[in-house]
Length: 362
Ligand code: F6P
Image (cartoon, rainbow, N blue to C red; front, top):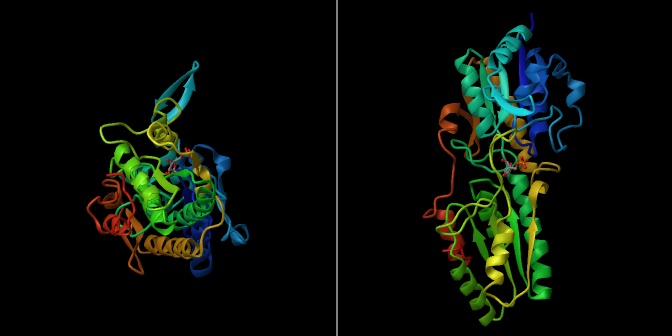
């Protein structure tokens, strides 16, 4: 009998998910004659029989350049803490036993979990209950340890850099301050790298709490030197020294994680109180998650998919594929989710940004 494996995509989507699915399906079917079951909407799919379907080669045709995921995803579906509505109230229940028995019924002998920190932590818990899993690191936030990058990050960076380029010309024409709020949750990778690439004047990241007076001074100084505009890129998780993150929606109820957002408006208000300049805010939001993956992400995601199948073949469960230098390898999933990969405020990239004259809010 042919070996049967499963694949699901969990958490927020990102460009390159379809490339991973295609990579898994093609290498499993073409190279090995295995069967691949696609599970829709993350771990939730196991709770609904109609959401587990055979993926044939035809289904992954033409999906390589497509954003999103043909399997669907959710960032609310934790089977160990599953939100259900009972008598009008949200209750969190453990439905993991249903997930485990469904995986057994389906005869899945290796499950590829394509996800970020949250989905991979769930994968680890399911492993403890006997589910054979390999992980593929996905997130635009690039906050997973033990891989140089996650797929999806490069495309998000391109989008953020393009936005900065566009904001530059209009900032200069109108002599304005333009604030661009980017995603990244608690990590500042998107802000820092797009800020360097897009020539931002100020970059604000969660790893370096900002001082609004110093930012104002830097903008005034730019004016003295003849630059009557400034471009600021702020990570959604950035916050003032001694202050708090701007939270749009706290965790609780149907929402498993807190939603950040609004720091751009806060900075606009704070600077507006000090500077006599026009300030505008752009929130880049989910544009960073959509669209066609970059060449880099297509290639990385495809290779990750192939490597995941090789891990299953080798029986190397509990491992996550990763990129180290130019080589694809693998690491224990638990090493990758031990803590978030954050920017070192004293590290090389921050130092290089400051050497370029970029103000980091401190
Ligand atoms: O983790 C990816 C991410 O896009 C974060 O950068 C952002 O904070 C969050 O997801 C947004 O989530 P949602 O899609 O629930 O708004």
